[in-house]
Image (cartoon, rainbow, N blue to C red; front, top):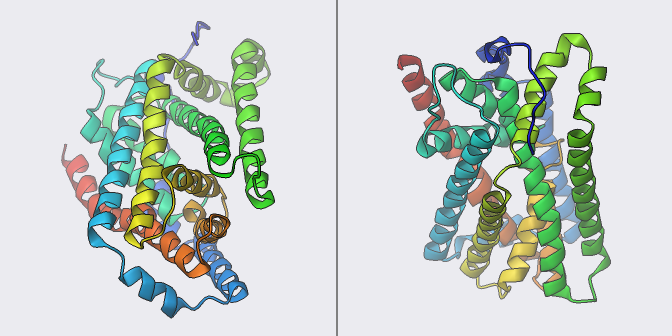
Length: 346
């Protein structure tokens, strides 16, 4: 979508939050963050109590997981983050989010390190703060507009949610046919409704962009324009973005499929994709970091609809989160201080 309205102020006028405001250690120790982890634990404990599940039985089943298939799940997951990084670079190019001193953009490996750190933050604090942190890190490295980078991240989230809604519908029909359980249909309807609403929202933002700029208060207008340019400017080269998004979600399903294989659960690839998509939908719940607690319980519930026992479903849920949540915290805890030192020296 072209964005041809004039901009009066230079890119450099948009300031990103200072490092202290985004300090991970400070955010982690805030009462809100600590409460969010307590909520996650409470959700899991209540669910296990109602399902009469024993942690010992679940962990015993987890301990018997095939290490080779779990390794494939880890490789698939971190490869999917590389594809996500590649797609974000396309979005930055589309929106012309460039460094202040030239046209060169960070390489895909550099973007990948930023992406992993943002995922790391999302796993530690609620409300998706890692998304803002990603824009902050990009600005720190190339002195580009924080708000415009944030606009590309909003566009990325919109693309993910809209494609998730479509793929959830397709995979649900493949798995359940015309007899979709009420529990699953409710989530599918929510995803589809959200996807349609977001699509309409993008069209409205594009069609009435001049009017919206006119009603935004002057004190935040420049920041709004930068976000809008990043958002609407991202929607170019749609076939490439669609292809990369399809690869990303396919890899999400493949990761979960490898996890189910590791515990000898007989679940089809479309079923694994459906479960992975539903789990991804639950990560948007803002009350806990990356939907912690809600994702595990939701995964157990949908796997039960597919015929898995609650114990097997819980072992799959915990193993999958070991790959896509707890390992990110471990990797990020190592990468965070290393990259901070390296970037301060450069």
